[in-house]
Image (cartoon, rainbow, N blue to C red; front, side, top):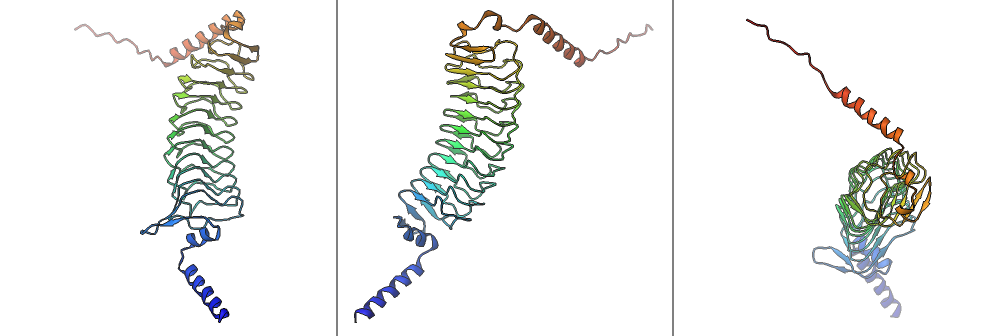
Length: 308
């Protein structure tokens, strides 16, 4: 009798599992608490982690709302198809084999981390990231498709970016764009906390933010002038490893300057000879600008009217 009762329990449990959708079956197997709404939407009140499971594709969680964090990092994913579309906490798909973000969440409540993939496009990303956005260590040549607003830090370092155009228009704190192929700073937000663009190909600071609230790093580039620098950089200024002849244009209020001419604790400590470009370079620059202006002027011959 006991054996029949036990077999009956097994059959009931098997029927119950068969009635579950794949997402519910997975959550039960992982012992993750959830509720199911009348419309079939599944709500996970806490976090859901599929990190390091050796997954080549995600299970279908597209009808799941995760109110905590969702982590599918450290797998072998080539696509985010099946990802929950609404995540209340952090989202991480880092350390996979993704080339795009299609199928990813439409809404994220905190950080969005997709570093260490093979991304060539940011299409599919939410338009606003309330926390930190990390797209570093990918293969991006453009920031097109990037979120327009980032509440905290934005990391796009170690890519192949030739421009910052298409990137966020507003960020809450730091902007890191080191180790790319930038020649100028066009596309940078007007205000940033700390800005770091070390190890690029900068020849101009055109497009630099009007206001830097922290430190400014532009070391190891090809700058010959600091024209275009923000007037105010209240913390550290690093410009070592460029082709500067002076520190003209450097911020006057920073508390630390690291340059090819030495390290200074303030602008007042910089020798006067370094505060202005050498006169012969100044004259050469003026002559070059005059030549360019002359080449753009078209001289038309004067035509005299004949007397009747």
